[in-house]
View 1 (tube, rainbow, N blue to C red):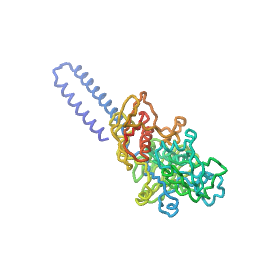
View 2 (view 1 turned 60 degrees about the horizontal axis):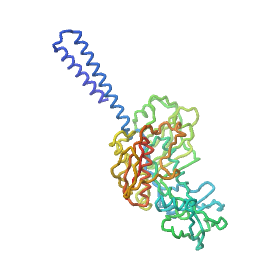
View 3 (view 1 turned 90 degrees about the horizontal axis):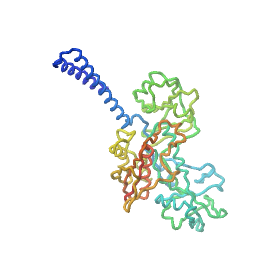
View 4 (view 1 turned 120 degrees about the horizontal axis):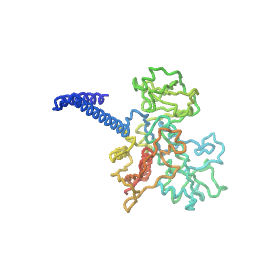
Length: 473
């Protein structure tokens, strides 16, 4: 509004100066003077209008204030011992998976059938080494594993159960308009089943007292007999969630639109939309924690969220005549420093900055987008990007890091098959290929995982660019 006022004042000043200049000119014909004034005045109006439109277009494409989107708290994952979990040393964390349907990997007391149980193994090695171990059909490798001091011939089968569990965050992101990275979990992508070559000799997990993995024992971080992968999420299902429903008042809708009185609205709140119904859900959580409710109906396009941070209340606006069905409640806790130091947790690091680029138009835009990942806590540095029309090729000192297998990829939120159900997702519309190679440096075991985490998010957020990961060892 202030900018519009400045433009109006300049226009008035210009017209006054133009009028004086034409009146003082040596042109005697009054009609010609009038025509000149109208011509230059119209030209000025047209130019001013085009400049204003250009400014609006540039601002709308370049950045969006962070206040317009729900910000996901930090998500931590950690591989910890079952003993520490049972002793309550990680009160902010909960197991990502306690059982896989009928297949119970943790041997809960209420599971009387051990015949379908299996032993899960977490590896601490490079991704390529992990795939080599678990891709038994290609490498035809078996391993001698000592169980209770008895040797067994086994192989390892890749298991994506933890990655599948992460998809819960995709539902959350879709409904709450969250477009930041959701999770960084290397151990979810280093999990495999231990398979006995001879089924008749298979050992029930409940009968195992000791286990030794021979030649690969040094890269085994733990098994489901002794360890579990946890995150700072508490997921509650099939429990009633107290709420109150009402037809929304004009005053409350205005507060949500204007983001006043402590209200924070989703960026998908449309001021001109006549939302009919309002539901309020109480979200009593500790300071630093946040609660989200996942709804199964109606579809996401008809739900809009708002929050009152002081009252710890979630507002849901919708038009459907059908009753909202809240079927999951997710509480994200803030771990204390003691828990983080004890667990060596991995977090979805992302420096949100002041503004977020919605489209990348210049080299400066690209550098700004990448800068969100530069100061990571994992000792990985990012160099100057390389932009070209051709795909970058590796050299002796640089390796092009290939993406994860499809089942392990991050930000696999929306596919073209169901894009109609996700109208706010980004689509690649660039007619030409622009390759952006990001050089990383670092030598930790999970260095390549962080690199993939960065480039896979950028590929999802900015699909108009072909992102390439370069590892400078």
